[in-house]
Amino acid sequence: MQTEKTDEELMLAYAAGDLRAFDVLYSRTRGMLYRFILRSVAERAIADEFFQETWGRAIVARSRYRVEAKFSTWLLQIAHNLIVDGHRRARPQADADETDTVMRLLEVPEHERPDQVLSEFEQRRRLQLALEALSPEQRRAFLLRVESGLGLDEIAEVTGAGHETVKSRLRYAFAKIRERLAE
Image 1 (cartoon, rainbow, N blue to C red):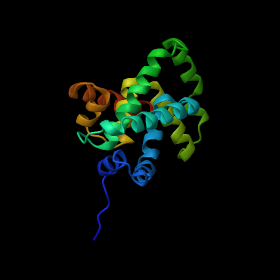
Image 2: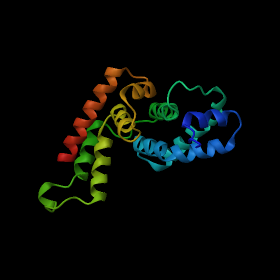
Image 3: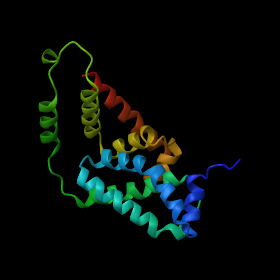
């Protein structure tokens, strides 16, 4: 019985010249990577650029790839670094007061909302707004945990933050999201 190769084995095979291995690896991880990037930047055009740049950097670095962590952790670390660099270069578009005002305008008052369960679309929209209200560090930690299924140590490795810092970011992120969704 032939076992399926791990992502790490596929990356090593790709580095050795097996282009089919890259196709399999890309198809396995592209959705996870794109969701992380899109939710981190919340603008599709920028997410598309970061997605392409992440894969470009992974391709260029293929010969230097070493199995020191899961492939997905390595790939997410590349994306994370690009996103952080992008945030550093971007000029802030609104200050905290302006952002709070816009967020309040987007919320639907309780008395105007029907007493029924929110549709799936509305729930996703409210979650997206709750994610946008988080600090970039909290949002990335939350997405790496929930969307990518990484543990605290892996998130710390991807983000370069300490274990306790990651724990704190996750605790605050979950609390803020619960609070926003309960409103």
